[in-house]
Image (cartoon, rainbow, N blue to C red):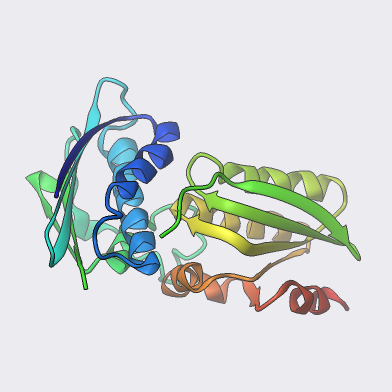
Length: 250
């Protein structure tokens, strides 16, 4: 299998274009966990290429080349920028970096894929997944107030096109006098680094109002992302909504 795609430098188009690419891989021997990781790595690589490589210039594009056989999947993402020194990217899990809103994309790629390399002065990232299913869903949000706690029930993907809505919803709730928020992840299928940044921003907004944020019903794939980024040390994560609500009680 060989797939080549040219992607414009427009962040708002990235999630749907990546989902379309991933759907072409369904004939390969991929389980749900592998699909999640491949999609995560591909999306982070393309976002980095658009935002940091091409600097969001409309006249530049990102080239994605995918090759797969029965043993491995190799993805090459190439931007048209100036290149960069990937060895100088700071570790986002260090204490001085963990609350920063950016800088986790490459770290997530390393976790999601089995091997990564760079070429072309850093303009090309080569990601390999050794081989051994779900469709995309846009994020939907419902808000319910229970005993003074705002419960945000999310459904679908939290990605670059919608993650800002989380912090916007948080700010609106704070303006209404609410400083306790529970985010229910039961129906969340995917999160990228922009989603992690939005959650961190919510924590900071609530800290400023002496409030608190809790998460519940986080699936094992997303919980794994929280663990490797050390976000599990920032958030209170509960097995279910009821346990989280009990923890909010004085």
